[in-house]
Image 1 (cartoon, one colour):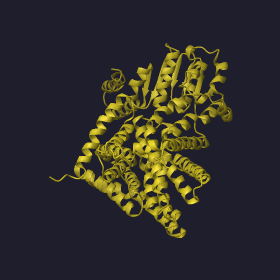
Image 2 (cartoon, helix red, strand yellow):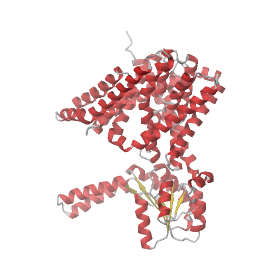
Image 3 (cartoon, rainbow, N blue to C red):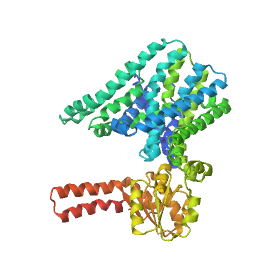
Image 4 (tube, rainbow, N blue to C red):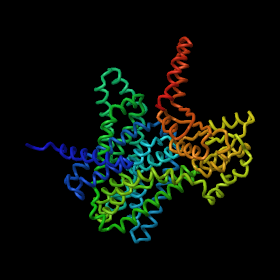
Length: 567
């Protein structure tokens, strides 16, 4: 009996992945790291359960294409428009600084200018697949550092196109510079066509399909748009995965993006796991052990160098130190598009197989440690307000400065975060004669508050030492108004350990945030998701002149969702 192509390999991949990821989950090791480890075990360098890596590479390319298509669906052109500053400023700074720094180091090591520039391209790219999976799992995509990270990743992905076009020129086997310029113009024209399709053509076409009320026809139409767009872009010289990302943006331009994402989410998750497994299969543990010292040196250099340059990028953009640290921890690795760049360079002879092999090993290992870096990031950022040199350079008051001024306060309110809600709360407290103090990690917000005469200080509200300086033990209430779920939990735990009787109010984004915050010790959670539901239901029913008693019943039911999360 003939084997069905890929079937045995899929069975092996999923079986080993399920066992490994389940076992590592008990040790609280991220699933991405588990999939990569499963790939190491089943690959040629492990137990050799799968020896035809090419077949898995095909599946992996499909997986990353589906992943980036889903990311494109979730981002949408409207969201990209709101992220224009992180995309343009953050992305250009990060890619430019990383490529320049890598070029300088490679030149010192004796590499040719062309090869040094190419290695700079490879190192500058981070992993969209790994980072966004990790941020999404932690609920941090909409946090300040999540938005910065997403913006930089989008710029990196789009910059792969000119990098690919530059490879023949760098290797000396390509067309002259004017032909390269023509290719760039063609790429710009293609991207403009994609944007035009996203705005005008695809939404109308999907609207016609949706009117048939045939769900299977709608799924086929979405697949046609996504695969067709990716194929056309691939013919034009744009990598398949990047084409899929742009196809996602095209579909996201219609009002049916959520339905499309719901229909394809299971396929995306399955093939994404194959992608991570295939990444692990690229590693040969024996070869790594033989060259462990140079590989570790190169790995540490890449992780430290990239994280440092991302930190500098965020600092240049005058973002809060916590955002700088978390973005640096997220973007320290080398990404999947770097494999595409190296594959293209090997065919032109620009990169030797030995160098490409070392770069692949470092890239895979950097992906493997990224989930741990994401988990470690908040701990690194927790003490960022203690760096006195940076706070002096930023010219803002710190928690230590607050200790002297807050010492005499009693039953005061500590406000964590000075966004719109924090500003309105401070104004209301001031007019009511209630003492308060503001803790904020956004330098511009602190300066803005100080200019208005507010008692605002540059400090991390998640730090136990900061809460001591703010006299939390003598405070009447702590109100947390920050957009970072992990930081909220850390702040609640720190405050509760210092002041067991302190009343703690937290503004959260989602209903799912309620239970962890209550478990951490919060007294009240104001979930924006629930409050929005209350407003929507109330206004809609009142507009339809529903009996006020019935309206009250519905609103009570919605508000009871808070208590359900404590069960």
